[in-house]
Length: 214
Ligand code: GTP
Ligand code: MG
Image (cartoon, rainbow, N blue to C red; front, side):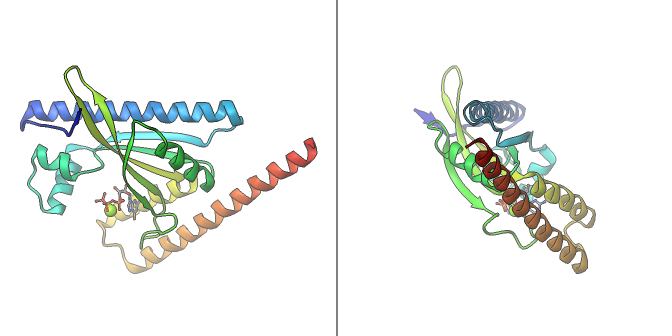
């Protein structure tokens, strides 16, 4: 029987949950590598360019809890901070994003808790990405604990935009002048155009190659 994370407050509790989130990152990371390798094996093609993973720093966990209006307890962080363990999958083409999302959804031992498609519905900022919140069972010696991992799937171009936008916004602490926000939204449009162009170019190349081989 799987159980939610049970925690004690204090250093012991903290160490236990960081251990759980690290284990969850390993489990999900390995799954993704296997999916990518299998895809390469079957289709001679890698949908994943690269994967980044991180555990949220204690500072930003506390900051988020504060923003949500919760006390900084381990119980609250486990219940309300969904992105303590985060994995970012960076794909070549937009089509790869949906392919990855579908493959992740079909993994029997992962539970998809929620999905946010900021590609079909970009954020006000211009941000685009496909987010999945999943839980993965972590098998400890005496129990199984379902642990949350936030998966962000995006193209290289989307990742480029998000990384730079994050840096710029950080400097202004969220209060960037309107002309900067506007320019960033324009850059997001350019990123989308670039992704669309690269995708159609890739399709054209595949078709041309198939015609040559026929
Ligand atoms: P938080 O924004 O994390 O408090 O939670 P949420 O429930 O609003 O989640 P959401 O899916 O909106 O965003 C989660 C993560 O996506 C963030 O921690 C960022 O990594 C990323 N993200 C969301 N919006 C933006 C954005 O406008 N710019 C950038 N660079 N990243 C964003
Ligand atoms: Mg947000």
